[in-house]
Image 1 (cartoon, rainbow, N blue to C red):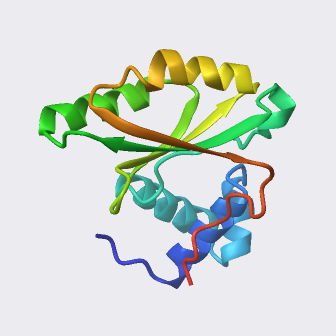
Image 2 (cartoon, rainbow, N blue to C red):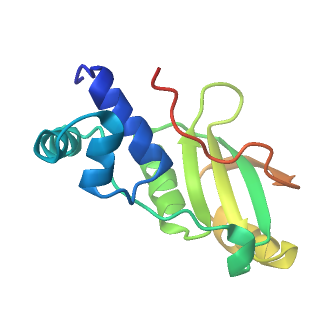
Amino acid sequence: MRTLDAIDRHILLELQHDGRLTNQELADRVGLSPSPCLRRVRALQDDGVITGYTAEIAAGTVGLAITAFVRLRLSSHATDVVDQVEERLRDIPEVVEAYLLAGDDDYLAKVAVASFSEYEELMRTQLRAIPSIAGITTTFAFGVTKPRSPLPLG
């Protein structure tokens, strides 16, 4: 694991707030000249600390009005079953995030769909078809209390 100094942390914080900053703008904000700033950003990328840059899209503005959190419980934890489950979750476009859990449930998936009927179809045709599913529990979100925010880098 890479040891981050205060400047690395500042760079990461600034990029989490705005990944579209130019190198000059970033350098100005963290108190470096452009060349050393760019070297640090490239090192953070090469070391796997920065894994990519994306645009955040408001789901409702593109017709995805329903957010569901789906907890999955498996009947088997054999390696081949777990591999199949994880591959299937990655292959379903409506599953926008998925996490392996400790506790009563095995996976938590965040699903974005246009309607409850679309969710029902997804449940019937894709989620229930995942091998070794022993239980599925769904919770629907009414709103976002705290949107995705920067990691607390100190």
